[in-house]
Image (tube, rainbow, N blue to C red; front, side):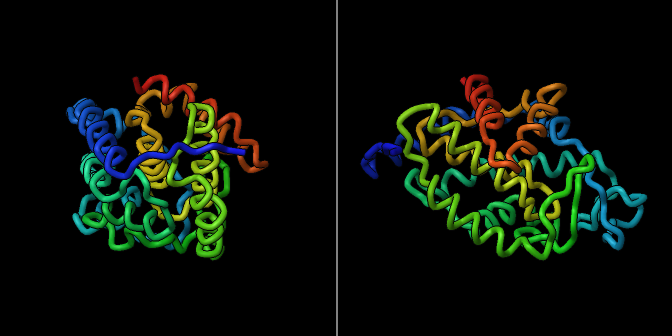
Length: 247
């Protein structure tokens, strides 16, 4: 049986804010934003009938900012993600149990200035590298199950050791990514949620800079695919490395 730490509300809240303040200072440079852009490059198989921004040659989704350059959009999304990362610490406490509404709110917090559908489940089917994500019409039900069976079990993330943490992160992350509930930003939002869980457990903010590049990128995607058979160990190993790199 999993054991949980008993943290006082006041002490936990102070530790949460202090830890976040110290570690976010590492993520505030122009170079870090460029890394976020580089690490999150990747092409989805785009459904027919998708709405693109005029002048983008069908490479940029229709957006409020009328951005038609892929590079410019990637930088805008990365900058807004960094701002959302900083804000989310003030919103969710160390004892917060996450739900599907929180997931939508996080997506909206990040991308509401860019897309009209921010925080709303996608209505198109999607695949990436030949890998098919959950069918769009199943997403509402899948997210309900995700909340009841996964989020309620693994958040708040009050674990007693690193092994329990990596197991919790792996299960939550894999199940979320397999659903892929939004049109854009699922991987990055999944990492936001993992960071919040890690802070709840008293660990530093996660540094994902190395995990989505080169051979590590292939290792990550392989771990997601193996999770389809409820094999979460490969993703747990991925998070072990991420945590190690975060110190």
